Image (cartoon, rainbow, N blue to C red; front, side, top):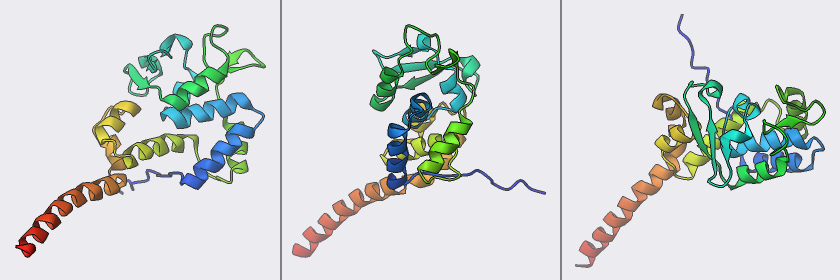
Length: 197
């Protein structure tokens, strides 16, 4: 028996992302909403976000260093923090008071799971079946669709093997078509010049 390719690929449409963000901005559970926003902003794994410490985050230079102990690859992984991630970090309000970034205010301890609240959030947004890990795939797909290379995806997401990043190669079709059109425009101009002569 062979193992089927059962990798699930789920990407959000612009409309679905807008619905999710609308729910995340309005829901009263601000802490969990910030965690989900952070996941969508940096493409990290849930356990990496929940174990994030302020000592690993450099907001001035926009860098988050995930220690090897918290990284799936068991290697130090440096994550560039974009503008939306920095906005989330500024709104958390735990810096200087807690060691961890995402802390449950009721217990004073870092979150270990957000499954129950996430299920409610995704249901409210009409995104039944959307997994938190799908936000990581969506982040990667947005990078590729914006023309970033698979090498960049590998580095940002901390993939230990480039083959893992290859699963997003099919999303680069628009970028490849644009590159091919560049050559076509050049050839078209030369053909037009020859016909005019």
